[in-house]
Length: 325
Image 1 (cartoon, rainbow, N blue to C red):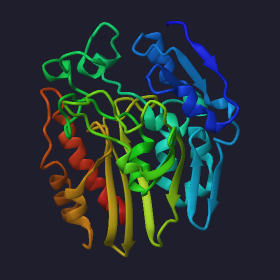
Image 2: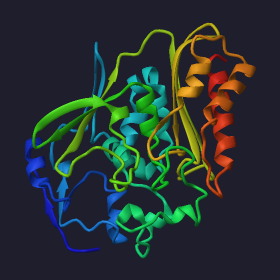
Image 3: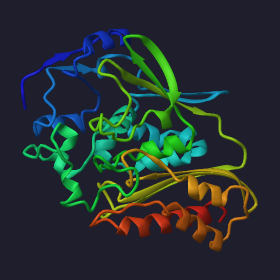
């Protein structure tokens, strides 16, 4: 780990100026992801801005307009919050299956949304992959068991966040603070796919910007939500494939829905094809099967991860049937 300055701002308004615009500064919250990157020399910031020194960023509050969650709220705070358990179940379930209890006690919502990829070529300090400024994505011809089946190219990472699919499915908005002031956008627009011009980033944050809070709209009547995560181990593991489902139903009829996949793309992946099959229809096993097949129609698996296609298809069917069971 390289030497760095450690700064404790007293006010939120100070942070954009302290971050500057040179990518040499990083904010630190729980530190569960960033410190690992620093120890492996993947990131070597010259300055760390400690957000824990700023009061009020961990608040969770409900009103007539919905629910607001501060970016510094821990994953345990979210999992155990009664309002989230009752009305935003998918988020409570997603936060509750992140890593281990110890990590959930310190890991924050903002950090979970902004965590970096787990691809072993990216995480290997001796591999100069495309994500770190190199010339190629080694997963293309190498080990790609855990890489993307949707939205890949020029690199094929998958976004590791559990809370991101749930929040996108629930229609969350994110508030961002930067040197130019504050803006609020749909969380779905916060994440970006890699491009040839910019294969390095997973979100739209500029170097002097941070997430300050997440806002969830008031739930619609007759709506249920859930999060299902498939992984190799039953604890402390990242998703092979996951799904966040939000269904508005009347009996067994699906009036509206949102299906967001995790573990399969460089960003939370909306399954428009499955949504189109299910929306406005009476859900049955057969319809769930059709939705699963539609969800993977455009999948593009790599040499070692075709199993994700099958998992995704079955998970979409399971989500559809579960919504009306």
